[in-house]
Amino acid sequence: MDPYAPDLAACRGRQQRLLAEMERHGWQRALITRGETVQWLTGVYLGTLWTPCAALDANGRLTLALPTRKRDLPAAADEVVAYEAKWHSTTRDDQAAASAAALVAALPTAAGATAGEWSQWRPWLQAVASSQLADLEPTVFALRRQKDSDELRMLARANEANAAMYQRARELVRPGLNELDLYNELHATAVRTLGEPLTYFGQDFCANARGGAPRNRVAEATELWILDLGVGFRGYYSDNARTLAVGGEPTAAQQDAWRRLADVFALVESTVKPGVSCRALHLQVQEMLDAAQPWVFNHHLGHGVGLAPQEGPHLNPRTEWDDLFAVGNFFTAEPGLYHDELRHGIRLEQNYLVTETGVELLTDWPLGLV
Image (cartoon, rainbow, N blue to C red; front, side):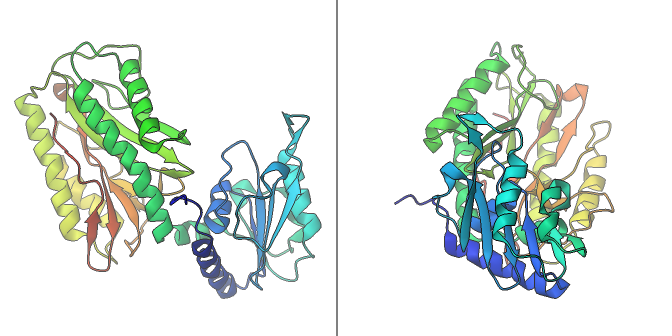
């Protein structure tokens, strides 16, 4: 038995949580067009080549439209309808329209207010949506912050690849190593660990740089190599970071910067619990790291991870996001300090799960520069 097969009972539980929100808002139908929302509710992961869609009605009935060849996949759905995604092995340009048409054909006209995912709305679905159309996405994004046990299992599996990649990087990083060669070896390490193709691979692989894709460049002694790594495992993501000293002998300044960043995790672990403001935590860390000027910390403190590499909660100073930590949040904390003196900087990133009383560290692997 595959321990990472979709948990259809958990998907049904998520459907019930969405139904409760639909009742609260007075929505009679939710039209689902984002692939990650389809996976979250039904367990079906198809990747970026396909455009499934679904409808959840207030009576609890979920109708799912899948490509013909995917129709028999296990799914937490009451009815699965098929659309032709390919003609004679060629992917159709109008696949989104075909998917929507199959769903429309299976649904009665909406009897009341409808909610849809506006950023990926399909006009062909208007035929089964009422004139009262609301944006479903804020509700779904908020619900997705609470990770269920099946999701935590997928995230932990993705993190197993990250742990193996950092271990391999510590064996390989040295002066003269080409960034592309390290990238290739880390990708191979992740594939070997998971035993299957990755559904994502990223994100920062540059030495003596704040981040970015690998370059055809060799590392030099005393540079710092920020490795902010993430894989996709069947649609779920990992994201954490370590920084390694090329040559194994960090300078006094680099060691000082590392200590300042390591202190941030002690603050996170003593501060975060349900109800704490993510924005307030960011501002507290910003003040803490501003004491290290001219070294700079000028990005978010972290974010949630799940069916997207970055999602809520947002550890960010923007007033548009003023999230509160809640039980079940899986989040990163990624303080950094950057400056030419540091060649070019350090970023460290840990993963945590918010519990009833605080946080659980999920990435208890070596954090040091060597």
